[in-house]
Image (cartoon, rainbow, N blue to C red; front, side, top):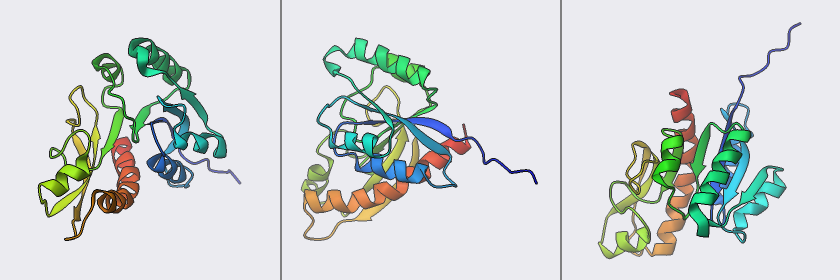
Amino acid sequence: MVKLIGPKKIRIAVFISGTGSNLKNIIKFSLKKISPIEVNLIISNNIKAKGLRFAKFYNIKKKVYNYNQKKISEKRILKDLKSNDIKLICLAGFMKILSKDFIRKFKGQILNIHPSLLPKYKGLNTHDRVIQNKEKYSGCTVHLVNSKLDSGKIILQKKVKLSKKETPLSLQKKILKHEHILYPRAISKILANL
C-alpha cells in the first residue's frame, strides 16, 4: 500500500515585539493537519519580548535584532529569511515599521493584523481613540503590508460591538479573541491565492 504524503507546508516567519499571543495562536494553527503553514522562524526587535518563550517551547528558531541600525538589521533579516526558505511573513504585534526596500523584496508576502476596522484608526493607541470617539463598533483587520502604514489590501475583517462600559483594556481583550480566529483564516486565504 502506498502511503500518501500530505501537501508540503509553506514555511513562514512571524515577527513579534511583545507577548506573542497571536504568535502562539499561529503556531497552534500550524500544528493542525489541515494547516497550510509551518512556523520556521520567529523574529523580534525586543530581547525581552515574552513571546520569544514560544520559540523554546515549540522548538522554533528565533532571532533578535537591534533595530537601532535598521538598514543593517533588515539586511540580516532578509538573509535569514532566504536561508530558511521563508515564503510568507506574518507581523504579530511587531512594533517597528519595515522599510520600503524590505517590503518591495517581499511584496505581497507580508501580512499584518491591526486592531481596528481599517482604514479607520491606523497606527497606535487604537482602542483609546475608538472609545474617545464614541464609536459603536470596532474590530480587527488582516491586511497585506505596503509602504504606507496600515494601508495595504484588506484580506479579512471582523466587526465587534462595543458595550456601553467599554474601556481600552476590555476592548483590547474582546478584539484579541477575534484576532486569534481571523489571522489563521486570512493566512489560509492568502496562501490559496499565492
